[in-house]
Image (cartoon, rainbow, N blue to C red; front, top):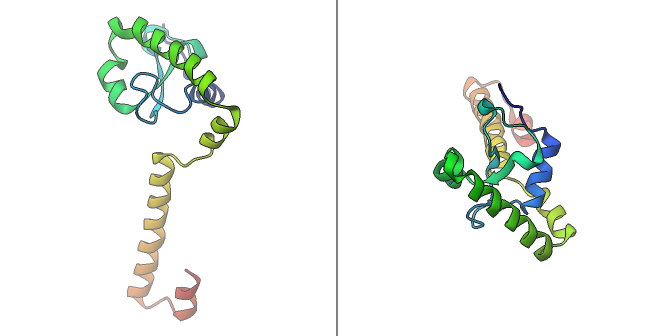
Length: 134
């Protein structure tokens, strides 16, 4: 039996509950929402089966069956602490910050634009006005 993916709405809800921090180390920004029970084992894409982990904690603990209960307990405890510690306004603010993925996408787009521009200059097909527009 194969489980299901998380919807974007469920992912956002899990991230907000975790205050956008890794539920395991509480030190780093989370990387992605991961299944406690893997999809391959029938794990559902619901909030109870999700945990927000940084890449390091996911590598260290995410695929270890014997750590599932501990991760679930750690997650639930962090949710309680975060709910008391942070206001809705603080969570809303974090939701709109750029992530590493956002920055990587922007850098890729910028490189594409500058590479195209430099190619046009090298080919002599870009004049001063086009250069000023970039």
